[in-house]
Length: 349
Ligand SMILES: [Zn+2]
Image (tube, rainbow, N blue to C red):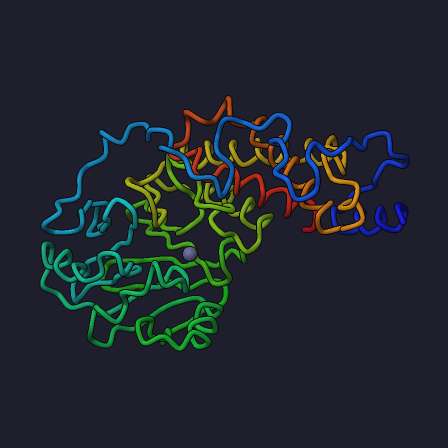
């Protein structure tokens, strides 16, 4: 039985299991009783554990406030390009001689988006660009009214046709790899770099302004959203952060957090991600299976995998916390899910 369980495990965990039982430890609690915490459990609370409070967010006092009466903040990015934000979501609009091009419409402030544009111009919205299909970034599209030309990558169109959501009208113009939008004297270069966060998620490059908008990949100064921002392809996500760094932008609009980003932010995130990757790889190679398990559970391959993965994640969190807990805002909120997502990707991708 043990050998067959070991082979199942080797498949489930992607491991070459050592032969023999020398690494197996005795269970710390009787079946059905709560066991002791995993050895080496870090001080940061694991997923599913409620904490009295999270680590304080560094530099939060330096963020320009959002006027609560308006519900948004407008930031000029040069040559008729503006960022709109509520300090949690970010979108952009660009003014040209006959109208306005809107890039994303997050529902969290889409009711005020026309007012934000009216602060700058009374020209009509002629174009709307979707960064990707997710409702939290474009679910305010219908609130803009009118019949703008809607531009998106073809995968975004496919996903939106499937969603059949009146809040997110289907794109009227699609492209596969590249699309240049020229309106008056303004230019936007759209490009697709493959799946990372979600199929269809694009780079929006404003060359005259040296502004790059890529949503849900980089989180300037902050821990990424859980599971590398719900990346559907984690190796693709690692590649895309590196690709963003190659674009000669001066300002990065990343779709989230309370400020725009720089190349230093991109490199810091990449360094953090590579630290998580190498800590996880080490943990996968050095963590023995079965430790602390009840004998009766050792024939349950799902339980054995769960026990092993939990201890891999503990090792990863312990390894990266000293360096990163005070460098990334909200580090403690999602470090567990980054380590969890990383071990999954390293085992099976
Ligand atoms: Zn998204």
